[in-house]
Image (cartoon, rainbow, N blue to C red; front, top):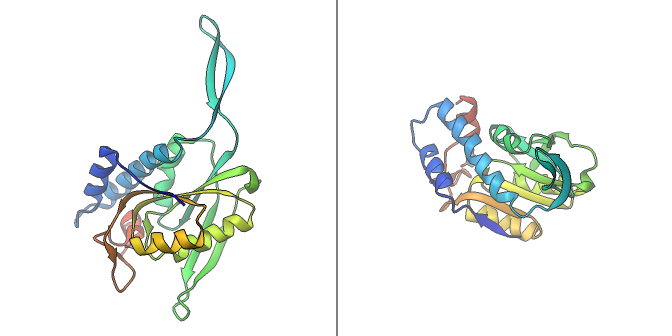
Length: 208
Ligand code: URA
């Protein structure tokens, strides 16, 4: 697994704005989408293109177009939905797969309550969307589901990751690529990332 930490100044600037204590729902939502769009640019840099000839304004012209595997984006409910529009802006034809998981308070294991994958998952690249890669439990379960559905090309996009979560996911799924705007210091005792963003779902949806 490769971990790609974004170097782009716009990503750093926008993530910095998202860290403000009193940020409004609107600003957090807008920035979440903008950072997701920029991460998509990073995470798709190596996709293949092919040359095709089209009828241009002055006659035949050779242009490049996307080749090979089609993309499905997979927002993890609910905070991942806040990244979805930013990604769709750049990949409008992407099919959307959705999963929802909660944590069993006794076993602390993730439990799936919703799963709807796009068709032909074996022919797709999956871009998992979740603002926070914290303990890694949800991400590992999501990757397990994708692989079970036949998908063998998986990338994850995150605003902020904790080193503990990256290590767990790396150990469990060494073939998955991670694209993250920042790797923060650590998790606190409740599983929140420090300094982090707080509860990203609450901030995107304006709940408490
Ligand atoms: N989920 C969040 O929303 N924030 C964290 O810091 C960790 C998990």
